[in-house]
Image (cartoon, rainbow, N blue to C red; front, side, top):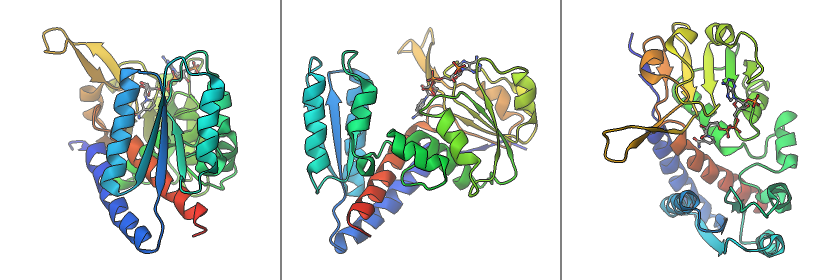
Length: 292
Ligand code: NAP
């Protein structure tokens, strides 16, 4: 049977449409959710991300604020901006676009954002809440992965899930989320020191690939009927194309699709979900700060 293609473009659009209605209802009750985005420097990719976040806010009806600091801004200047947004009661979510210039310590900056406004869910307090099953926010990309599994029509309860990659942004929080009592998966966490990785993948009902190695997961590494979520975004050479490059995931898509029950494409899979989940976190933050 042909694999179901779980489209992140479609699911994220559904989510944004749902949130648009939700925001209209919030506004009718006197709530005006607001996200503040801080960008340091002129990194072209970061500028695109920030502009996409602004567009999503506009679509849903979330007020968005933006502060752009020059690339040689000091840590203190950035902390001052964060402090201003922390104190501003009309701002519910704060996001500092990464990566930061090398002279600014990322950890210090991310921890300066008040946990209740930390819509990226990078603050250790919010990460800790997930570990003990008391969720306030979910980190955006992992939350997008779980939403794709659910809206694709698949359960995680009682399933063996292999996660490839243990980064603090993707693999680690996913592992924390999936083995909680509301998800009930059994997680097999894999990384560069994992032995017999192929066997572990072959035993998994669901595989989430987040390692940043182009087309790493091959067709002979998955069992029939597996659900595969590909988080990887890798730019590889594509001679003869107009741009000379293309995006591929961490999964050898065509081969794995032959055996899978469902699979996400790259691009158009997990990628578009991240911003949708950021919007969701902004609404969560607004409800909490309005005491609703
Ligand atoms: P990362 O911080 O570089 O971490 C990579 C992880 O993969 C590490 O845990 C590493 O293991 C593991 N790994 C690398 N090569 C491996 C191999 N050959 N076998 C087994 N494990 C291996 O990466 P990341 O930030 O999580 O990103 C992963 C991918 O997801 C990238 O392609 C990135 O662009 C993409 N991504 C997409 C989104 C989105 O769609 N919105 C968001 C974030 C990331 P060790 O710990 O042992 O080194």
